[in-house]
Image 1: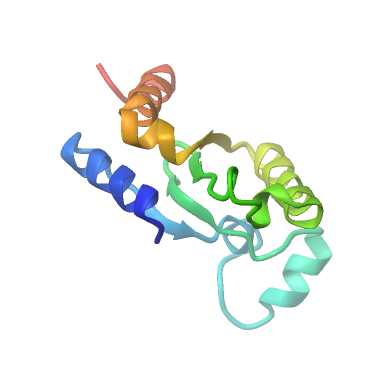
Image 2: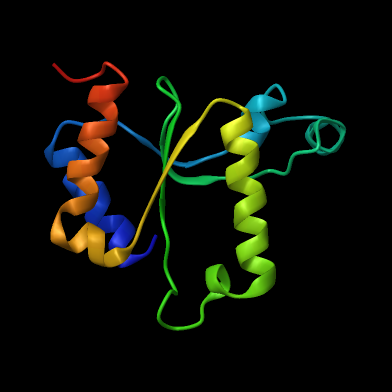
Length: 125
């Protein structure tokens, strides 16, 4: 877990927001983990993708995008394209994917936006 992910997890817990780390949405969409997962993923055109954090009950995924200023995997061609495929698959499966930067986490902007999204999904009064 990156420092930004850990900070966001602390913000979420402080706000009473329950979440799952490293949620395997590709596997979930294909019947769960276990025997035959690779074949099921391949047949569905999916991979065993994971979200940094997720709220499966409302299909809200949170991705903290690192490496933007350091030339990390997410900003290079292959990694960027792979991330887009992951987000496309998630959207097709009904997920809302919220992407944020470490700076957005640090400033408190990310947790504010997550609470707004949850409110739009009917989870906050």
